[in-house]
Image (cartoon, rainbow, N blue to C red):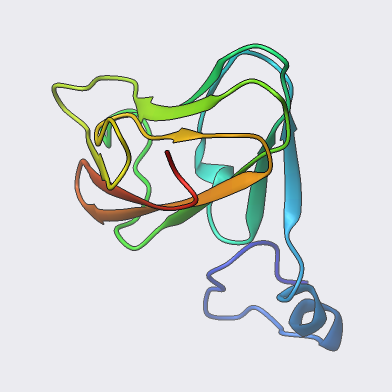
Length: 129
């Protein structure tokens, strides 16, 4: 069975694999800080639930080499505002149309997609403030 995407030569693609492509795997976070990992890419929904202000951090390419084109999907289900920012702002660039372009925030029940466009370059799009 294929686990994760992309598949590699020799993988057998089954009906169960195909059907799983329409569903997200949940990565439920409840703390005040979460740093994304390689397993957060593809069809993973990072949910953030905390009553206090919290943060989702994107590491440098040297720490976690997400492929260019990776999309990280985040949904804030908690009352606390969720800020998306770089672990190392001088190295990793986060850009958005939010009030603070380098650190967009998500209010409760808002979501965003973080799209990697370069070695250490990410754009955040969605319901950001």
